[in-house]
Structures are given as C-alpha cells and as structure tokens.
Image 1 (cartoon, rainbow, N blue to C red):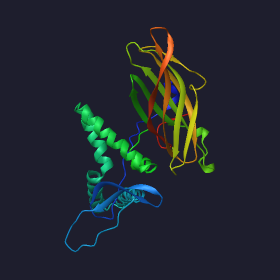
Image 2 (image 1 turned 90 degrees about the vertical axis):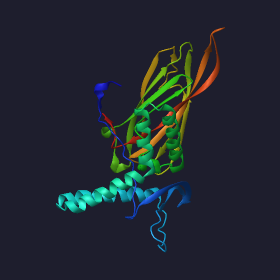
Image 3 (image 1 turned 120 degrees about the horizontal axis):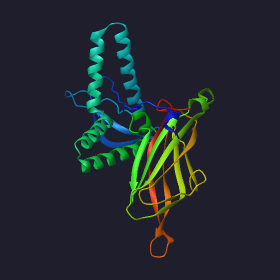
Image 4 (image 1 turned 45 degrees about the vertical axis):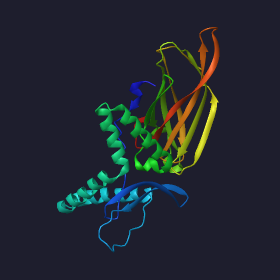
Length: 280
C-alpha cells in the first residue's frame, strides 16, 4: 500500500485507570468477575478501622479515568481552575499508581537507555497482562496499532488502519486494513511462507480464527535480506479489536535444495482501532 494512500497520524494509546477518589495499589493477581478476567486492585491502607473499599474491575477503572478527564474539561470550560488543578493532580497520581502506565513508561525508559534485557522482561510482563485482561487490554491501552516480532531471524511488522469510507458504524460494521512487512534477516537461510493463522478478537471478547494457505493468494519465497509486503483487511462488529497469529514457513535445505523443516513465525498482537491511523 502506497504511503500516499494513508492519512495517518501518530496514535499513542494512553492507558486508563480510575479510583473512587482514593489511591489504589496494584496487586498482580487476577480474579474472575462477571465472566471475565480483570485486574484486582485495592485501596492503600489509610487508618486503622477504615472499611475496605471494593475491588475494581478494569472496566470500572477505565470509566473512572474517562470521568476524571471529562471533569477536567468541564472545570476548565467553567473557569474553575482550582478544581481543574485538583483533578489533574488526581489523574497524575493515578498515572503513577496505574500498573499499565508504569509498565509502558518503564519499557520506554529501558529502550531509551538501551537496557534491552530489562526491556524484554517488561515486554513479557505486558504481554502477560494482555493475556490476562483479554478484551479489557484494548481499553486499558496495553496494545498499539502496530507490532514487531522476530522469530528465527524472520521479522514481521504489522500496522493496522481504520477504513472509514468502507465502514458503517450505525450497522455495526467497522472495516480495518493491515499492512504486513515480512523480512528475512538471516544471513544464509531461504524460507517460503506456506500457511497463515490469525486470531481475531473484538471488544466484546468474541474470537475468530482464520487459517489458510499463503497470504492474499501468494506463497512468497524470501531470500536472505529480502522482504515481502502485502495488505489485507478485517471487518469487526465493534470499533476496537485485536489481531495476532503466526506464519508457517518452510526452510530450504542447502545440501539438496529440498524444502525440509518448518518454523512457526509469530505475528505479535496489535490493535484494530477506529480512532487510530486511517486509510481510504
């Protein structure tokens, strides 16, 4: 897909959290609630004899954060700057205590300081959170609209785009495109993409798996240092969702020129977001 086709803008997905006005401390445990897994948070102990507040699911945390952001806008519009300042402090305190924000900031800092072992560890923790939270990870801001993974020297980069002209929100149809770049970064290995496997999830947690030969009718062969790009699409019933999967690739055996072993190349999870980058 040509670059000129996109009307793209930087889309940093901010994590979301919230409280009932009291500070929260994250405990890395998860419990079943209303049929879905959610993060378990509890208020910091304040004074002896204080009644404990109930645990909050991720949906409630997301809503509380949205409420605070709206309250800030209303306070500024009404020129109640004292209230706006107080709400901003509360939001900043949430950012310092929110495990999602803490993890993402820690990852960014580790990459900036070239602490790649720490970055890999933090990224694994974020991936575990994504797995535990399921569709709530979309609201929590753990996912972005792109992903990059490397498996056995094969790099897969994906960027998704929303297609507003091909979508009909009133009819519950949201159309997305995703552009994939597969690069053979090995020095001497030749591979061929044989099969694809996608796991597609909408914001309600509905999951669909798609399997098939090749990609968009092709089974490309990648020589060392070469890339293959293609664009495909995915419809959703919700304005947000996610995709992840893997490619099965055959490896050419240099001794006799036969396709021998196969490898499973991971496609990292990425977000489909109607508020994200757009293409015609």
